[in-house]
Length: 389
Image (tube, rainbow, N blue to C red; front, side, top):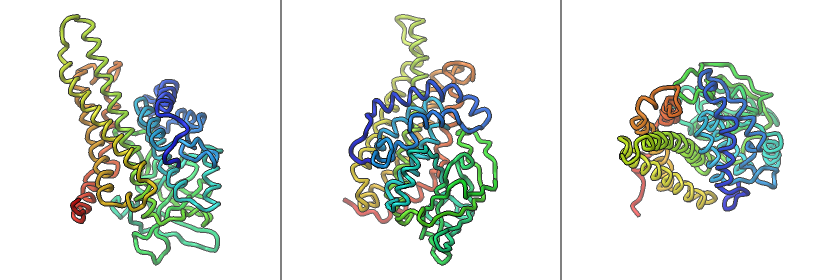
């Protein structure tokens, strides 16, 4: 994944996100939400633009975008369909892990396939019985010559039935402790998914995040080179929090703009008077800008240190990236609530251009995607060992 340069500007990435959003995502978003179905049309649009290979370097056949550009597309598409944007974000997280920690020729070849075949990648990083802690596993990789097998009870595998591969965490072997994990590429042709639960939720309904018992076999060469602990600290965790926060920022921005359009329309109806929601809108715009500033600040910080393992595992950086997830997932709900107060009944209704119902339901998913209380607890543990500087 490029670290300092990108083959596309943020402005062009944003324009691309708007085009996909207007031409495809927005058209199908209501039905995706109503039916709780996979947003195939928008994912096909991602494929048509080569975006499933956005983070694959150009030398491997990808687009060579950097994380900031990828986040700009996610943020913008999120304004039209949060489920579609979340699927793209979660896919990008796995691609980032693959290209940064898959150094073997077999894994580099797989990265080439992701770009050339526009493969959609999912993940199975949580497990029933361990309380949502991605850094522990009960299941393990069983090796037999050049092949591996793994069976995992996963409470959530987002869009697992539609993915071309599921990146799965497991203990290195039967004798490994829970934290000695690897990340294995489990290709869909050698994966069996037995449903454990459905996905009838308030928001992010199109992510189709069912629970499954996953049984997979594969080539041991498709197990990432680095221990999962390193993959998580250096890439998966910061990339996830930055992309998720960018998506939530997109939701907040859409809600804020709907409120702004509502107040502008009221002002045009009564020239010379200040609409009742104007003062609240001014405060909302400040919050929106601060939200964007926080995300951009952490993005810049991560891009500066992403290739320095000591920096990404430093306590102050880990606290910062955890805090971003908590603050962004809280702020998105606050912004949408404030926008709803401004728009009033027009925002409460589902049949107006100012409707905020789906945005609010999606926004509430942010805090429970890796529960904020768990992250706060982890951050508190880090604070206990952090040295003053």
